[in-house]
Length: 400
Image (tube, rainbow, N blue to C red; front, side):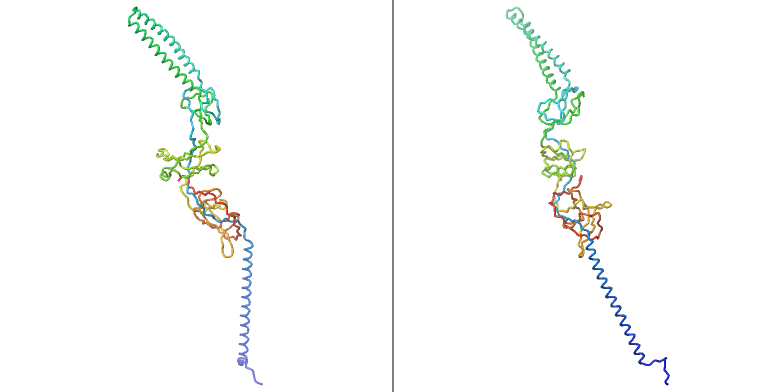
């Protein structure tokens, strides 16, 4: 029997071993390929499911397409309304008020009695001077009688010419004295008339700061009488703006609610600068139908210098964080729409909108609902609001 050599196997054994090794390598590679295909398929399914989930979880929001409007450039200043026909009522005599015939808000006619100042002392003066006038009239009659007697005696050659001249002088002096007293009586009667304060024109009685029993002098303000109708807005413009203001510039008067109460144009510009306030006085005539505006009322006057194109954004769409203003925009990214937070600078409010100074452009989709729950990058489903009629927008710079 031939002995087997286990240490050195025959060539056929080597061939079979190599074939087995190659087969195992192929099987391993095939398994790896199958695993990779399966992983790729799973990845595609996960990606597809994620996309569908993101689309299904998008937050519905209302958006507004940012409009571009013609925005007037304007500046607001303080203004005071004054009547074009207003009279301050001051007494022309001194004394104590005994009666007040009217109350604030009454309509009065020209010449109507407003107040009575105690006239007793003046009446006594008038009566005294009138009595002196009556006495002087008697003296004039007596002087006339003496003159007539002296004239007859002189004609009869009984008295000298000097006696006639003396009688004439006495008579002339008595007549002159009577005339003086009569003028004094008339003057005191006129002054007595001033003790009853009358309205100088038809109008409405203003505030009455005095009361019955008060003592007044000629500088005391008793009340005012104002004619209803057109007013004038006195606008105080800083001197550095004096060269820019000119006749015909549009003016809007703003009420306490910020809405336009009246419109007008500059009708007068003072040629001088007020030395105390360093302002230039400008006036604008204001029609006042229905008497909605009142005399001495303070309003903000918006002087419009020109216009420019610019965007506006709803006030409710703007948030403020640490002094910085932000809005959320609906932005298309790939096949999805996401919310992106955008910083911006805003001007004053115009109605329900902010004037945008920087950060937005016309056509941007601004999210106007649900902004409190949004986060940057959150998927959203936008619904565009119908465009509202463009209101007059104004960009203002206070005091400048």
